[in-house]
Image (tube, rainbow, N blue to C red; front, side):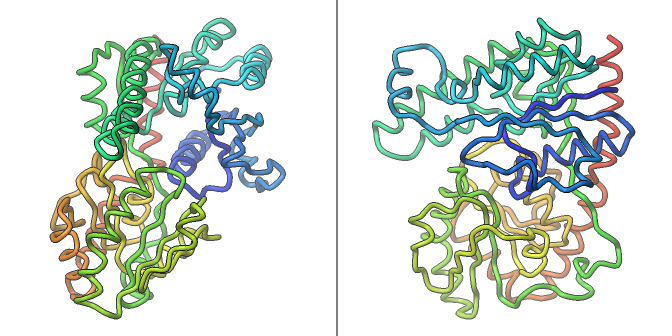
Length: 403
């Protein structure tokens, strides 16, 4: 098949969950001998120079980019209040991107166009006009749920605005729901949500895949198990659910952990740290910021946390942590959509006291931690290998293209 992926982020470097997820599908398509083209927005917020893309990536996909300014514009945000459209959808509409898409569709015959998220859905009419390709929405989240959950916190004015955006986002998702040829969510839970909302088209769940390392790797617990008494979080710090989760953890859990284990250190890594976070001075908390090699960072630490209380979809970094054999403590929302078993390959807690206690147990009990590391790795090997997951997805796509 000749596959076109439309993305709202440039796919290099792979330093956040969304980009890692997109690229794993590209690699999977290539691994199974399909032709891949990527048309990506290169935004100011996540800008990456195309010349930096390594040659081995260019062998996987023909990567094209369009510079798009998606920054929040408060004047446009205010005027949007008097329309019926969702401002966060409008931000990702670009005449330049649309023109580049038209040119691409006129030059090449694609069998299938994979939209990497609901924000690309506004280009469906253009694809229908200029191509006979089947259109699939691959979605990381039920997007309006994120806004509904976040609207539960904050000031009265903020709640009102977020609820309005959630309502408009939901209406957009509902309007588009049956305009594709298929939907590919990342979890069975999201698949059921789409069906309950009225989805009539084919649905296939495909979790984000990760690259599984060698069985002889020290990540299996037979070598470097990570810095003693280290706790870590890695994730984009321009994604508000990550900020909210870490604020909750630092305020409600970290003092308890510090009291029980004074040697414990918390390491925070990820792209685009807000300035106020860079300046925070918190006892035994290390603000690392963006790391050159996420895999090396994950392997160098002991206990991974995912304290999300807002969000939807599936956590790529959490899957990556399991593939490296890391003991993890997560909230229910953080682990949502993953085939995990609480108390076996992960600890799940939503209350601060329980969350703190699980982190303390894993830091202080090497035998328990080693058991969780081994079980996490086993689960990753069985369920998260991107080559297997994308192979199953391609079987589904073959039926969609034939229909």
